[in-house]
Length: 178
Image (cartoon, rainbow, N blue to C red):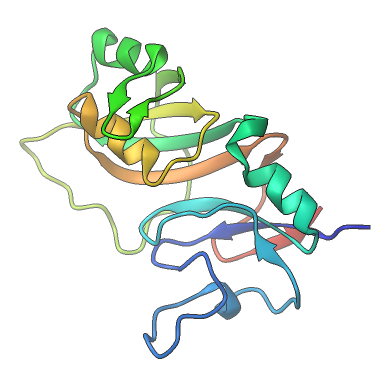
């Protein structure tokens, strides 16, 4: 039976088990389990759900965009997106690497989640807000590029859900077997 681990990746941690000589934190600093590998990635400056498995087929099925596994992000953005910005995300936007599939998106109240370390820089003159964004692709830095494309750069990005798995009850730096 395949092993499946849900990990709440903190900000600043690489989504890999080694980074020769850089001194940057990796998955090995948090997960002492042999022969498991991430199914997909999160950028170093992103936080949240990372799924790991010891089964190559399952890893491919989770991370391959052709299976269109929905991924839900809690995104703190600069500014206050209006309905036209949200509609552009819902319809799909055209980026340098081609059009995105339509996303589900809505403005939300600030989520009750852990503080980020280091914290997001607060600026009195520039408001920010939170959106919940669900995509079924997984391009490099896709959510950040999408929000910037509609004029609202991402300040904080937390992947909350992948398919049926979520971060419910998993603190930053912690993991659990499914």
